[in-house]
Length: 147
Length: 213
Image (cartoon, rainbow over all chains, first blue to last red; front, side, top):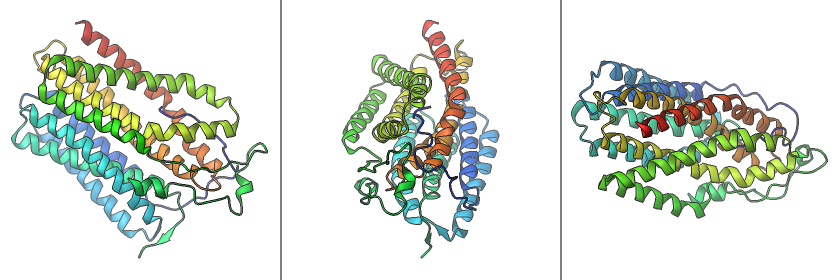
């Protein structure tokens, strides 16, 4: 809700349809799984939480990240320069954000396997969002052949 | 970051097909557009450094300050944009909307993530400081509810809105922006306005309850 509408700013023809794999949808699903795991963990901290549910969600999320890597690796005609440009700076931004969250958990005394699960969750989150942003921008840019 | 900004500048005058970008007889010029406003970065860094100091000091007031100021601005800006600015813009001329968006949306690229991170980290530490995170706290259920609300907002913001915001900015820097594509992407803001609005109102309800208890 944080931006206004600019409907119909230019030509009225529909944007060209590009047959691209569902990278954005998979990234959102992966992100939703780690957020759900994070809520579960957060609802138990600072006490010790059962890690079965968050680990299950984390594994599922990790599989989706790998699926996205495979989808992207098969993509030939794509605006890779834009993807790299947006992805690189988004990664820097989200490493800062997840780094702050990690700092808070460490500061609060979270240790051991709980900290490992949270750290891996934050790492997946820090990858998912840049992939999502980079793919969402690059898909509308002129295509390039993969070198 | 300079790379993002320099590559985000319009390449030059409109080329063939720029006529197609006209709407209502007014051509859409493509002036230089900064995706990430460099001037705002020192302010973001200052806010984050202040946040880290507040977390390290772990006193009530600085934590309260970051959580309340950040959360108040986040909620207020979201509701104001969604229900006041959005409908007003919807009734403005298309070139005016484009001009507004070119100047406004890059600022949101920096502002909203900064507000979100200072609100969430400050809030987490504040909840721990006052004992609301403990399972024995009478406010624990309210805290969990706030986690769920924030989780929904994160999925909507990061999964739907932010990608659209960036894609629109990159489209607007082209010599001849595709209005149909921009319109299609911006519809996401309308489709999700109800969800975000409901979550922000729920946030206000939860947080005022926590503050009063």
